[in-house]
Image (cartoon, rainbow, N blue to C red):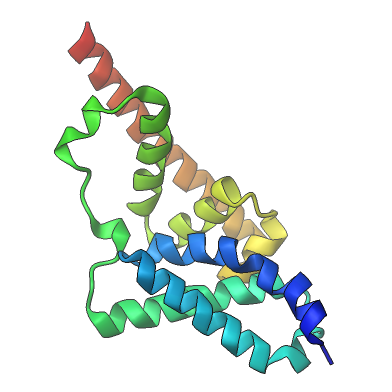
Length: 168
């Protein structure tokens, strides 16, 4: 049985990562915060079974993903990734622009590619762990990651070419 101290050191320490993940799905940061609180509560209630899992983190991320999708369905709210790029994005500075832009481009990818690229490139998960969180074969993770990176690279190239022409 997992006690409070163990729970704090193995599960509660994940809350910031879980919040960032939830925030990729939900428009309101308050919703993401509430969702993570809910996940923590559920994990605490299931603490007896947690020690049997390969990866508590992967399990927690799956819970966040599933609950976020349920919330999006329930609220009928557009998920973040459906939002368009704002028109004034070209005025931002390059370093911040690039990170912001990459995140926006990831948000616009098909669901599996978005999930895989976010977990690998933003949260720096290993392929094997991504497979577990996403419920995919490792090979499918690699294929989706490759497609996602190619799409983002192409879109970034278009933006920078546009910037060069605009500046030049």
